[in-house]
Length: 121
Image (cartoon, rainbow, N blue to C red):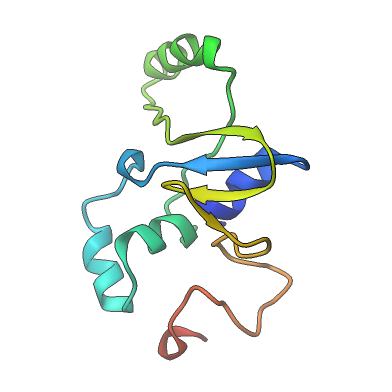
C-alpha cells in the first residue's frame, strides 16, 4: 500500500529504510497520472499502491542470485535502497518524520494525507 509504508514494514523495529528515487521503477504513465492528481511523480510512486510491485529485503551478498532467479521466471528486480540500523524512512537522504511513511493507511479511511483534498473520497 505504498513503497514508503511497505519499506518500513520490511525494515521492522529498530531499523530504517533508505530509498533512492532515481532507482524507482516508474511506469511511463505515472507522470501523467501524478499531474492529473496534482502530485509529484515521486510522491505518487512512494505513496501509491495500485502498481502491484512487491517489496522484499535481500542480504547484499544474495542480490545477484535473487535477481538471476527472478529473471529465469520472467521477472525484473529493482534495487531501490537498503535497510540499516536506526529509525525512520529516508528518501534520497531526506528523513521523513515518524508516522509520515507515505502510503495508504487501512485504519484511517476518512482521510489520506498524501492525496490533495480535491482527490479524497
